[in-house]
Amino acid sequence: MIENNWVLLVEANNDVEADIICGFLQDNGIPTRKADSSPYTGAMRVIGGQAVEVQVFVPEPFLEQARGLIASFETGTDYFDEED
Image (cartoon, rainbow, N blue to C red; front, side, top):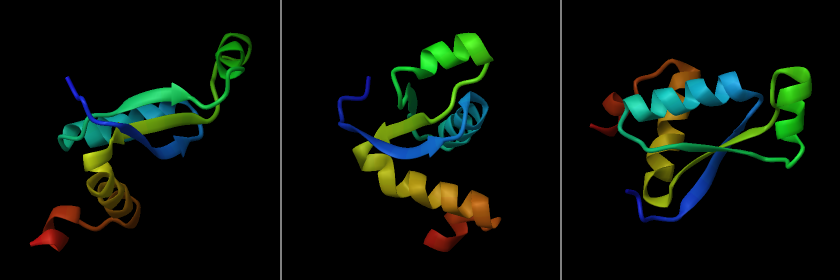
């Protein structure tokens, strides 16, 4: 179990985007968790079928690595090649 402080990495637009981000990071060895950024989001999920503003958190020691991976994904570069 992760004993570190969890910090906000990004706010995804919806559950699907948050799941993609979490899956990508987890595939690269970074623990993640999601939390709705608004107490009304749960109601929106029930009423509208899709939540908005889902926060993605990572343990603080993984924050910079997670940011680098997200940036490399967005730009199409290879994060791991840049560190060598």
